[in-house]
Image (cartoon, rainbow, N blue to C red; front, top):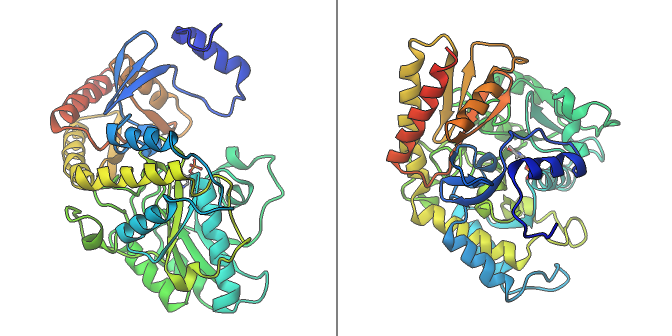
Length: 425
Ligand SMILES: *Cc1c(COP(=O)(O)O)cnc(C)c1O
């Protein structure tokens, strides 16, 4: 079998199932091509992508400007390691720090690595700046969080599937209820060892759980009062997904002139990944101001590929697309239409309990329990009807299309979704 032979969908799935570790349960569809909001399977059937690789493809599939940055840089210089300087990294660091309003950026590859980086920065700051006794630092996290899959990160997850038989776990985390300010206050009160509060501005994997209005800014104020770093994991919510450049946007004017919504908070540490690269390359980053980031010295942290010139070129292009195509504004506008249409449908639906989200990060919750297979079956039917989405739990489906979608395309998608749901009423 030559590498370039065209496989049927059945053949491609059989290969993955036989030779690949079974760490995912994909929807049975085999994609071979993508362009903008569309993907095509091995038999040539066309679909709307309504997941965007978990919000990595905000700029759409194979955006020509980002692909051009990738291929141009790939023919010139791909990797130097940080043993040497390269001519793209500094440019990217300047561009991205100005874009998001921070002094410094630490470049890394995956979302989980960026979360690990933020935790290390926070701990080092705790010992060297805040003055916490050595090895006593604690970081507050939220129940039902999702921050990735490393051993330290699963140590503070409460997903049994992610944790079971992976112990022993890393110490130093305190878990509180999400969207509960009293719980945060209790955890901070009389606990001088707290160094940071790690939070998703909207809990994505948990089922697009949007906190109450004012939660983030009140949480940030509590953190300030106790000299604790507010660490925003915007790997999924960031880069225009929720209708603003950042879901915790505290600096809208300098970021995106078309950014809508009220500024809420500016994190002390910002974690980005996924759409930072427009889905063409693994790129993630941690941003902070000098008082915090300067605790990191040579040898403290790193990665062979982190900050490579391809990643730098791709990330600049990705952010330029977000700015030039006003994707935050589009996400905000289309998100209102999407939730409006679904809310109308819900009025006389027995199947759907609610729709929630911000911008184009939304989920529907079914009148069913967590372990049901209804959401999966709906996703199979959506696939047959030409739209790809995935359940986040047995009773929830996340809807997160590329942000380059037009209003006509969105309305077409809404029609597919409503027609499909009606088949399950
Ligand atoms: C996806 C995600 C991560 C992990 O990113 P990977 O690139 O898969 O390691 C971390 N935090 C949040 C909020 C995410 O959605």
